[in-house]
Amino acid sequence: MKSFVLDTSVVLKWFSKERGSEEAEKLLRFLERKKVEVFLPELVKYELGNAFLKGKELTYLRAQAILETLYMLPLNFVAEDLKLAKTSYRLAEKLGISYYDACFLALAKTRKIPLITANPKHQKAVRSVKIITF
Image: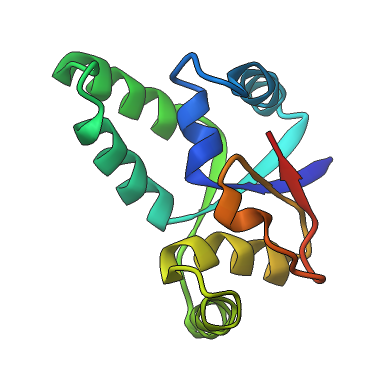
């Protein structure tokens, strides 16, 4: 089974109709059928909640339904430990990106699996991380 790290930009595409959402939905179907394994830093929960609050077209009831769906999916949320924190910090400093963005790269690097993203900040060259973009 293939494993991936997804960043928040991809997960958001599961619940919106924007450029790249077709690819994201295909990935979601594979996840639902347990044909892929997805890892996410715990941080994604907070980023998604914040994105839902900022999405003016999203009603409270729709946001609640999306959160319920998210928590029912077979996702692997990974809590940050010291090794992951140090790797995130090192990547953020080296690449000149936020610690938040570096958390996704660090998880992919430590797990030795690709990161799937639609975030241009993650598309910087990191030799040790394969990056797939939408």
